[in-house]
Amino acid sequence: MTDTDTEVSMPIARGLVILFAITAGVTVSAIYCLQPLLEEIRGDFHISSSTTSLVVTAPQLGYAAGLLLLVPLGDRLDRRVFAPALLVASAIALLVSGLAPNFPMLLVASLAVGVFAATAQVVVPWSSSLAAPRERGRVVGTVMSGLLIGILLARVVSGLIAGLGGWRLVLFVTSALMLALAIVVFTSTPSDGPRSTQPYGRLLLSVATMVRDEAVLRHRMLLGFLTMFGFSAMWTSVAFLLAGTRGEHYHFSETAIGLFGLAGVAGAAGAPLVGRLADRGRSRLATTSAWLIIIVGWFALGWSGESLVALIFGLLVFDLGVQASQLSNQTAIYALAPEARSRVTTAYMVTYFLGAVAGSVCSGVAYGVAGWLAVCAIGLAAAVVGLALWGAFDRLERRAAASV
Image (cartoon, rainbow, N blue to C red; front, side):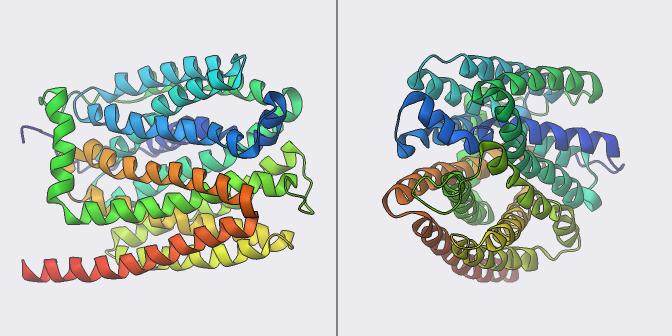
């Protein structure tokens, strides 16, 4: 490779880490801010719940496209300019979404929102590159905490805003936040300059080359797919559960439904601790524990059709497991190619968010056909498969390391 990325030795400024965490959280929140408002959107456009769930699927598909086509440019362009440019584009797409006169227009604009929300995955490898090796797990953990908290608080804040002015106001406010953040990022971050001289086409092809050559990357891609499948399946349908769409005993308002995201925020707060485990060489333990925690979370969520306490406990535990799994995966893949972290991110996150698309689609269909327990059943099955695959992958990786 002709890339010239080098490892840094000085610790990254804490304020910069916090800015990266906020940027990751705000940008990715655009994908999820409409999730607790699905019932209102369904009523406005007079469509079915399964059709309404496409509002979740469209930005996730767009996000996967942005990961594939835009994020690799983070290894080539000055991210101090590139990231704010994506934020401005995201603001425009959100504005168009808020003005959409019909459901097809909303879907198209939501797809564009997802494309430019890939800014979050420009920021994560950026923070990793600026961090010293001894602090990388903690730094990535903090930024990933910001990302997950953004996903979860998107539901809380959007519910509160929608209570004041409806789902369109949520999109207008988020658009304004993107513009403000673009200015702050451009004026507060260091210029990192280009690190690769490869043409764009070759840059994209090198992603496939890394997937072919790196077994660890392939393993973590599949584990990431299953993790996000379950996460998206749960959060897509929980809004219908809490609204009592199929006659459940819950009948919460949009604002109250959004507040349930706070239960998951507590889980996201554990990410830096998982990062410290990775920094100490305990990433295998972190991964195994993550899948076990996810499984426990699904059992609790299965009881939540009858118990609000079980629902809150399940949300907290489940999101902790998901975040731990995500962080252990990213710590492992960022150690593979320091000069190509954006492209490694592309390979991993495209698969990760294809899992989100699959999860939201399967969840919408399962809930429409058989309700909440069906969603929990498919999520639990995915988690059990994930744990079994991780056991197999761990043995293969240990064997490969021993043979070197």
